[in-house]
Each structure stands twice: as structure tokens, then as C-alpha cells.
Image 1: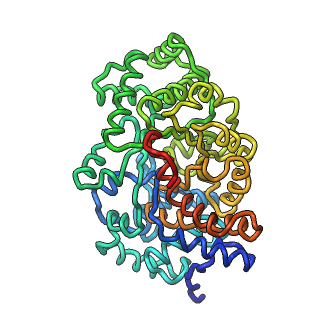
Image 2 (image 1 turned 120 degrees about the vertical axis):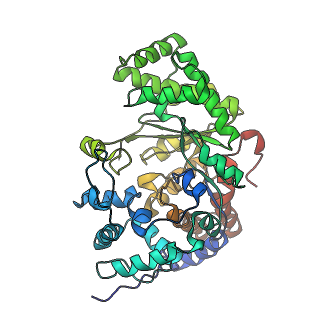
Image 3 (image 1 turned 30 degrees about the horizontal axis):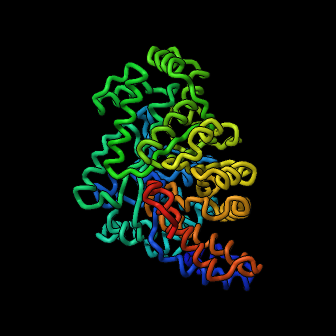
Amino acid sequence: MMAIPLAPHPDRALPADPGTRSVARRIYERTRALPLVCMHGHVEAQVLADDAPFPDPARLLVVPDHYVTRMLMSQGVPLEELGVPRRDGRPSETDPRRIWRRFCEHWHLFRGTPSRYWLEHELAEVFGITVQPGPETADLIYDELMAALAAPEFRPRALLDRFGIELISTTDSATSDLAHHARLREDGLGDRVIPTFRPDSVVHIGHDGWRKQVEELAALTDVDTSTYDGFLAALRRRRAAFAEAGALATDHGHLGTDTTPLDDSAAAAIYARARDGDATADDAAAFAGHMLFVMAGMSCDDGLVMQLHPGVLRDHHEPTHEAFGSDRGLDIPVGTEFTRGLRPLLREYGHHPNFRLVLYTTDETTYSRELAPLAGGYPSVLLGAPWWFLDSPDGMRRFRELATETAGFYNTSGFVDDTRAFPSIPARHDLARRIDAGYLARLVTEHRLGEDEAIETACDLAYRLPRAAFQRRDAVTACR
């Protein structure tokens, strides 16, 4: 079989209607080269601190990308054959060429998915690959990628410049010592690569290893965390350390959105039971909701923007979690309620001048019913970008259609790439800019917006809004 050329179409993801497409082209052209502001993602700070060459195509594009491994696993490819390490020490595939061949053999599985778009963009526009992956081309592509990865211009910091990344935020546990960020500051990158404070491991008292995480928190802060008051003091000290390291935001992954506060004695009692190993599932749920309320109060004090990512049942398949750990593609969205759950928090802080809350969802049924009205009513609330299963062409279009009429454009926070796959960052932002260009072009052709306004709005969505959304409120007066 002859190799199929890999040549992403210049009009990909733009509207099919010729008239609307021509307007979308002009809008997209004005945003295409704007700098990237990457305020939520999972690229590790160590990658940029070490600035070592990426090892091979498999460990760059396949092994860490749960979008990729999830699809292959759904078709019966075992994770160990994709190089995903097992927790029990049993062997997984270590030959990167064999892993790459297995991925290429299943290239057809990605038809119609956003992964196909991102991978084509990466291969063609980042690495200059000219043929599609497949069984016959796997070794050819692998060799070309290996040659590219050996070149200095494909080192992480060089790609940071090439991709036009103006600001990138990592996601870091509350117990991270931020040593890699310290190295980045020493190298002059401290204002460009910043941490985000993620306290999930210490506020979700029901998970394995919670006690150990709290002990690490105590060691890092030199605060006695044997009591609830000490625990809160340690969290405040870690937040201050993150802010000093350049952090602009916190990030919270919860199953639900309950923010009902507990009185101090009830919270202290649950914390004590958790320390003794006696906390119940109800205790864990109540404490998690309470801590969201507490963290909102802390954000009012220190100005860190609060991000909430609820509505995902993590590690749905226990045997996979036991064998391979978390973040292996088996986290499944569940229906999520925002209006009642967030009411206690917003009653207290929704109009606070120093508080900002960015809300994400994997339940798109809530866009027009709950999230857009909340963002369109509370000055503290911004609606985050389509996330995870929704950062797809049609998912992003639906987001604009369902949210804009109530929330407008300027109660949203701009696109976030939410990725561990560093080379996919520009592809993800490019897709978002194309979808926004298409949506705005439709408003122009329907005579609902002038083209000059559409271009200005597109530039705001792509660049100005994410910059403004994550600055401390007292530093932001307008998008421009």
C-alpha cells in the first residue's frame, strides 16, 4: 500500500459554507500568530528545568498521552504494550520503536477525534513529517522523529520559544518543594514558567496515602499538622510559597461542587478521625466541600485565582488503577450540579473584590442552564474553556453556542490546553482559535456583529482574556 500524504488542510476546522469560511479565514489570520498563554496544563516543570532532549517518539507522543493510550486500550491493546509502567514491577514494553509501531498500526482509530487533529498538526507542522502513520510508514516516521529530537531546536526551551509560549503554568501538588521552579528562576524563566497550587492530595482525606501527604506538608512548612488549625496554617504557608514562586492560581479537582462550610469544631473532629484512620465516606465528602469554602476564603486573602474542575469519577476501573496508577484514561465524567453546590461559597465570596473563580465542566448540559447564568451574574465567576472530553471541534462550537448568549464572551477565561503532551500545545490552541473564528464569522455573516468587532473579540479570546483572567484582580482594569 502506498503511503498516504500528511498535509493538514489550511482551512481545517473552519466553516464549510464558503461565504462564512472566507470571513473566518480573515479572523483566524489575525489570531494565528498571537502568543500562547497556557494557564492550565500538566507539562512538568522538570522538563523545562532540565532542558534535556526528548528521549524518543514513543515516550514523547504515546506513553504520556492518556487520550492516545485510552483509545488504543478501548480496542484491546494492553497498556503494558504501550510502555505504560506497572505499579507492581511486572514488565511493560521498553522498546520505543515497538511501542511506536503499535501506535501506527492503529492510526485509523483516531479518525474524527481531536487527537487526530492534534497529532497531525504535531507531526506535520512541528516535526515536518509528510506521510501519515501506518504499518508501512512507522519506521520511516520514527527515524525522522529521532533525527529531529537530536537537534538543539527541538529541546524543550527551544520549543517554548518556537511555539510562542509567553506564559505556561504547571500543576503542582501542595507538597511539591518547587525545586524545579527555583532552577527556572535562576535561569531567568521564573516569570514565564510558573507553578499552580493543587491541594487535592491533602484535602481529600479518604484517599490512600493522605496521612503521608500531610506529614510531608508539615515537613515542608515546619508546622505541626497534627491538629486542624495546624493543617490550615501549613496550607496558608504553602500558598504563600507558591505565590512567591510566581503562582497566579490554585486548582481543585473534586467529584462534586458542594461548598457547605462546617463549623470549626466539626471540621476539627473530622480531621482528627482522618488522622486516626476512622473517617467515613460521608466525612470525606463533607470535609472536601468545606475545604473548597475555606480555600475560597484564602484566595480572597492572597489573590490566587481559584479553578474548579469537578464532575469526573476518577479511576473508574479499579484493576487498571491498581496495576498502573492514576491518569491512565479511565476517568469518566458524571452529571454535575453547580447552582446549589456553589451557593454557600458564592453567597460569601461571589462579590468579594479580591476573589475570582474559574469553573470548568465535563457536563455540557450545564452550560446554558447553570454555568453561563452564574458567570453572567456573579462578578467573581468566569466560565472556563471546554475541558477534557469537550476540547473537541464540535464540543467547542457547542460551548460558544450555549454559553455566549447568557455569559457573553467577556465572562469567560480563554482557552486552556490541559495537556501533558508538550508538542501538542500549539495544536490545541490553534484548533480553539479556528473554532472561535468560525463562530464569530457566523455572527458576522448573520449581521449580528461587525467584522472589526469579531476580529477584536477573537484576539481577546485567544490572548487578552486568559492574561487578564489569571492576574490578581487589583492589577486588572480591563481586557485591553
